[in-house]
Length: 289
Image (cartoon, rainbow, N blue to C red; front, side, top):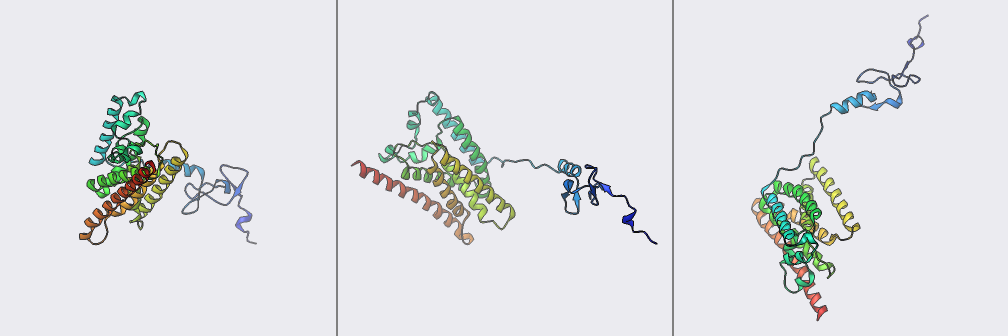
């Protein structure tokens, strides 16, 4: 009488758990493995040792920062230079009046006609940590945006976003606020990066960039609303200006219409900032009269 193979073959046991019988083998090394040791693979299962070996031998991806660009580097230099001047004038001693003298956004002075403060404030920083955090954000997103839209459009977007951020802070913030920092303009660059990738969301890399930008925006807004002393109104204003400006500087319509759409888009954002400023000035002057 013929004998069935299963009746004469001795059961195998897992090479990591000798008490566990199994019929499954690692498709990479061939050793028997139990359910506890199985890791699904494209074909069959791998054992823990082979999984670890594959992980060690896999190429490692290093985080690469974008290559430095001319306008971004110049803006970083200006911010550092202005901060150095503020230290020489006494900021290191805690004298906040130095910031006011150098152009901080002070609502009562803006109402008095010093509208230039809505721009100069974006080049001032309260302390070294403030400067370093903004310098990091500018280095990353400034270089990214400049590399894809060009130096001239990046500079225009930075300045317009910074101005709109200051205008929003002035229009809806406290009269007692003294605001400084490039974060509103940097949020504008982040918003423009989001807009740039949204227009190309049919590409997998662009979709990944959208997810990363959205996560970063959400995280920073949560921090801004949670930590006292952060001008989140400027962040929101800069972000909105950046998203709209990002779509604008990318251009719309046929080739001949793209330049006009860029100019009109950025000019409209600037005009919106002017209107907000004028409205707030009128409101505050009426309240003081």
